[in-house]
Structures are given as structure tokens and as C-alpha cells.
Length: 498
Ligand SMILES: [Fe+2]
Ligand SMILES: [Fe+2]
Image (cartoon, rainbow, N blue to C red):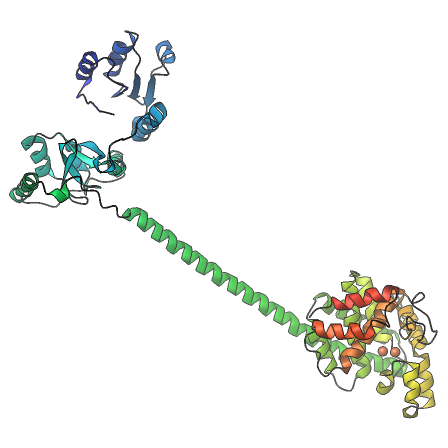
């Protein structure tokens, strides 16, 4: 598009009259020249796009009728408005078809003194295909320059690269709207400057003709990007720090729970040991019952904190010379772990299994005797025990069950679990030789858990309850526990972790 400028309304009217139909668009302030220009065009039945600058757009029948042709732009957003309207009205029809190196735009020499330091190179037009670069970007265009170009050389306009239009316009808008202050150029010696400009015009250095702008990164954009990058890095660093701290705290908390749980488990084992000793001496009177029940609740509290099972078991079993209480406490933890894996996670189940574990061998005082698992094993070790001890062993499931029944407000099934703890699914157990069909579900959990505890105690080291260790237990017990609920319990044993 070719741009024609008029200094004022009458001049614009003259140009329009002289070259009717030569224009695609008129851009003007609405007051004072606007109405005259509109009258000239529309009274003759001509049509032409107008962009009229005003903060008080007029209304009425005429403007309503011509609204496809007359558009108003606001002084405060003039540059953006013009840009948007031109785009909307002419779409792709306004393309700069000149080769890239000849794409230049005019700029009024007069306004250049406001735009220091210059946001782009300044050129003078030598011909349609020759533009000579005279002043470089970031230099200052002062009164000497303005005088030189507009008066001495009669150049009311200079040229900038089309890429530089936006930076120039942005700077101009910032100055007009007070977002940026006018920078006063550093003083120059007039003769030197004029000599320099004269020389540039005379020599017309080839390298400066149609010279392209050096497209460095916009320092503002660059700075902003750098700042953003720094901010992001800083934020990431802070987040990593916070995460680390949180993780540390979590680990510390977990370690604390682990340590506390282990200590509590040992204390509870010691307390169970004294309860069992008192129970066997003076019977499970109210005081001993109370001790045992409190111990049950405290044990369940530890179970529910889900500390690492292997660590708890290791710690409990390190209590020397207390086989019965140690294996009873371990049994409570293992039986509850199995129940958890079977999704029997209610408190009552934990209480039943824990109390059963505490009492199941309570009639036995000889630790060696308590290690015996079957009548067959007992008979093989006959010589080690007195007749009374042998009798007590054979009866201990029933005696212990009776002890449980003697407890006040004890949950049901505890006595059944205890009575059946030496039964076997194939009916080879004692004292009643019940098979898997008649062994209660909780008792089957208890029986497998009891075997698992024996298995762990027989090991030099429990270590972590590794899949290999669990596998060894399952393989060695698969035939024994291949029926009904027992198979399910064995499967739960596989799911035990930690
Ligand atoms: Fe036992
Ligand atoms: Fe037993």
C-alpha cells in the first residue's frame, strides 16, 4: 500500500477530491476534519473505509447505515486498533511483495528525536531499490540530525526496516502514554556530526546499501527470559529442598515409629512373660487378666502402626530364656499380619488372635516342652520330661482354652482357637484329631501362623521377610495345607512383606 499524508483537513479534502477512488482507507482524527471528509465521500454515493480516531464516537442513522465503512478507533489504543482494523478489512491482500532486503517503512524525521536510543537502524532512500544506512540502532537522533535531514536535505521522512516497525511503534506509544521517558541524547559536536553524515551520503558505501539489521535477541526479552529461567531454577531448588526435608521428616517419623514399636514390643513381651508367670503361679485372677487384656490392646496398637514385621519379630525373639512369651508374642504379630492379608482387619479379629496367642501355651512352664509341636515329637522326646509334664502337654490346648473362657468379657472364639491350635487339617493333630472341615477359620489362621513362627525361630536370621524365605515356608508346607481355608491362609503368607 502506498501511504499519502495530509497535514490537515482541508489538505486531505483536496487530495481526496483530486484523486477520487484512488484510496482504500482514510485514517484521521474525527474532529475537526472527519465530518467534512465523510460528507465528501458518502454524499456522492462513493464508498471508502474510514478509521476515525475519537474517544466519543458519534451515533445516529447515518453512522448506523455506513457502519460497514466507518469505524472508530480509540486514542488510547490507537496503534492496536489500527492494526486490528487493517487486518480485518484487508486480510491477506496487504502483503509486502518486495524482496526481503527491500522491505522498508517510512518514519517521520520529526518524531525520531523522541525515540532515543533508536530501536533500529535509519536509512535514506536513494531509489526504489537502494536504501542507504546512515545511523545505527542504539545511536541517538538529536536536533543536529533533525536539522540536517529535514532542513538541509529536505527529507521529511527517513526509512526503517519493516521488522523494526513494531519496536519503533512500541517505543513511540510508550513515550506518548508516558510509560517511557524521552531520553536526552548525549551532546555531539555539530560540525563533526554533519561531516559524518555528509560523508556517508557522498560515499554511499556499498556495504551500507540495503544493509540488513543485525537481528540480535531483544535484550528485554532476553533479560526477562533469563530472569524467568533463574526464577524457575530457584523455585525448583526450593521445592527440591522442601521435598528432601519432608522426606527426611517422613523417614525420621517412620524410623521413630519403627524404633518405638520395637521397644514397645519388647516391653510387651516382658510384661506378657510376667503375666504368664503370675498366671501359672496364682491363676489368671482379675489382676492378671487385666494385665493381659491391656497387653492385648497395646499389642494391637503396635500391629496397627504397621511397623516392619521382620524387625519386630527379630527384636522380640532376641529376648532370651523366655521361649513361651517370645513365641506367643511373635505369634500374635504373625497371626494379625495374616489376618490383615486376608482382609480381616477389624479390631475384634486382632483381639481374638492376640489373646489366643498370649494364652495358648500358658499352662506350660517348661520351655523345652512348649517347643514340641506334636504328640509324635513328644513321644520321641519322652525321656526328657516327667509324666506330669507329658500329661500337661497333651492337655494344654484344653486347659488353656478353659483359662480363656475364665476371662471376664473375653471375645468369643478365643477358646476355640486355643483348643484347636495343635489340630491339623488332615486330622493328625491333637487333642481331638479334627480335620480341616471342623477347624474354625480363625484357628486355621492361627495354626499356619504358629508354624510360620516356628519356622522363623528355626532360622539363624530372619532378615527381611524375603520372597525366597516366604517361598521356602510355603513350599515346605504346601502339602500339609492344601485343603480349604488353609490354602487361602498359606496364600496370605506369600503376601506378607517386610
Ligand atoms: Fe505354641
Ligand atoms: Fe501349644
